[in-house]
Length: 118
Image 1 (cartoon, rainbow, N blue to C red):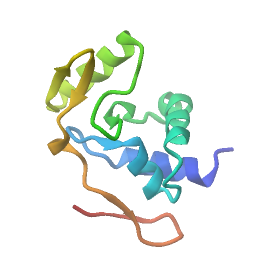
Image 2 (image 1 turned 45 degrees about the vertical axis):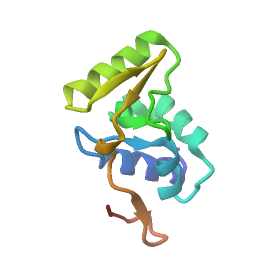
Image 3 (image 1 turned 90 degrees about the horizontal axis):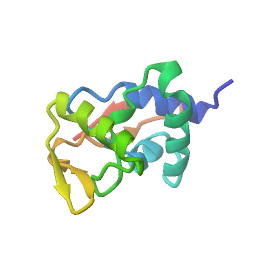
C-alpha cells in the first residue's frame, strides 16, 4: 500500500501537461514535504511503470536532466523533445529550458487537493 505522500506526488505529476516540466523539489513541496526531493526520485523509480507516470517531465532544480546513465538521459531528453521542450547541451550535461516549466504547485488544504498557479 502506497503512502499518502506517494499518492499525492503521483497525482500531481499526472497533472503536468505535455511540453512542461516540474522539479523534484517542487513536487515534494507541493505534496507537503519540501525537503523530500530524494523521496520523489524513489517514488518515480518504483511507481512510474505501474502508474503510467510521465516521469520524463521531472528535472533537477537547475533544469538539467538528473539521470546519470547516458541511455536513460537520452531517453528522457528524447521524450521531452517530442513534447516540444527545448533541450540544449551544457558541457557534459543536458539541460532543459526552464521557461517551459510547469506553473508552481501550491497545496491549498490538507485533503490533498491542489490548485495550479503561475
